[in-house]
Length: 303
Image 1 (cartoon, rainbow, N blue to C red):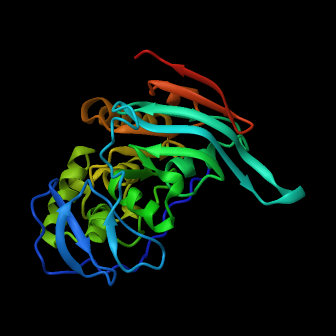
Image 2 (spheres, rainbow, N blue to C red):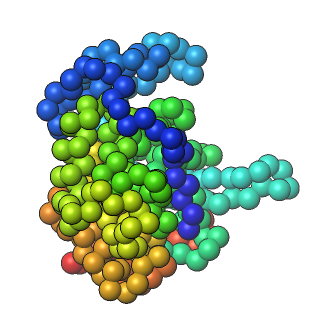
Image 3 (cartoon, helix red, strand yellow):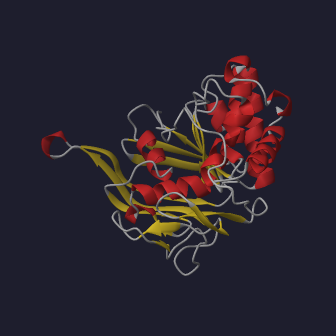
């Protein structure tokens, strides 16, 4: 499984981009004009999308992150219908997904398993708004994701999703605190707010005392905790975890999986996790197996 992370500028100015002071955490978020300047503050749960790739104006998407009950069950987070993905064309065409039908409810903990080449990587990239399907429909909280362009999908990732990777993907020469602050920097928070929110996230994953350490000064388990703190600092609805324990020993694997279970049960964060390990998948409430671009098995654990 190789879920491609969003591109990150590794030479980032950690100072705020605007002097405007945002309101208290969790209520409002920044709005910018097309030149990137902070213009006003608006509710974070509403997304603003350009009318098209050339338009300089923005509007609120008809299906913002608040689900419309007449279009989608209020309990459903994700709905896929006949989802396909084809690479290449003609005789060289390869169908990675052959028509996926899947519903994931809010606050579920789902493990996705399957052999290499089964299509699970492609499925996760589409679910994480890192790629788009060739045909079929994908609704995330009522939003028709298959109709969005690349920039619009990036707004979904920024406002509603968090990502945890097998290789941690931390910036090597920055502290744990600064790594966790990075998503907040792109949202325009002040330095004071970034520090406060990042420290709270680090404390919630049990490494408040490591905020000044760089990744090279941390163990593998501590690095993954920093990565988890970075993923949850923006309070996303959903976490996508790509082999989160793949680089960890057995003892640290148990610690990280207990932490993910806590985020799911106590904070209600939906988690969709890819893993090859059955003992790791056992922490999930539901296990989906993918084979030849189709879902071959879908079982709930009952815990």
